[in-house]
Image (cartoon, rainbow, N blue to C red; front, side, top):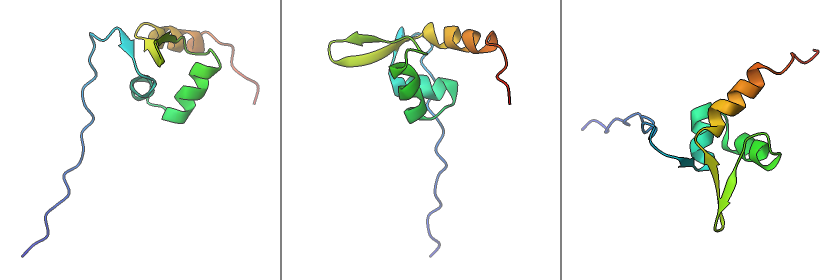
Length: 77
């Protein structure tokens, strides 16, 4: 008998109506690693708020962060 094939996982569609995102959801939207995203949040590069003991990123903070990157002068190589 043939072995069952692995079904490729498809990322879940982003809920565009979400007002607050987890750091993991933010990382997926930015297509960066989870650890990198946590570092950016901790450094204040990406705006975040606390809700009780939870850390959340406002959905509009994601395009604001991208806009900030786009207008940042190019770093010298």
